[in-house]
Length: 145
Image 1 (cartoon, rainbow, N blue to C red):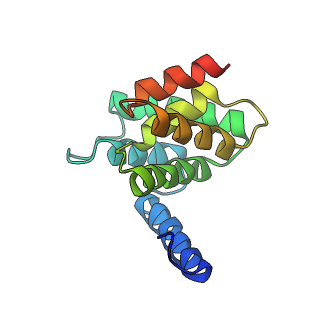
Image 2 (cartoon, rainbow, N blue to C red):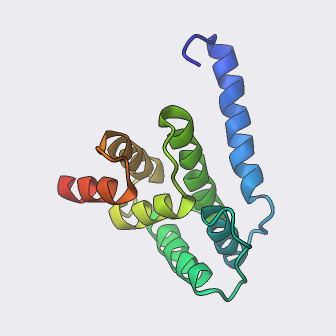
């Protein structure tokens, strides 16, 4: 993609954003539905979890913390996490889940700090980690504090 003209890069970026949004489009704007869809996206290959599933409830707790911390809408937080999942896959062929990025946002974000700063730090740590795992990236971010 580096050899593409800037205008084509912009088109591909816009298409990637649209795809990230379409993955969440099945969810309504309610935080419960967004949490359920984020959980389902993170558990790809398994049946969609029910609204009362403990994993969905845990995702809702993380989403609520991230919303409070970032002062963003739940859908914006979820879309950002999904976008950075796509970035990790496209730029470094790293398989990540939206819940991993949401967990990083809650654990390492600071109130008032743009969520993109935290998510970009997580992506950089994940790319730099020897095994490129979520645990290694979280450890590296914790060591930077």
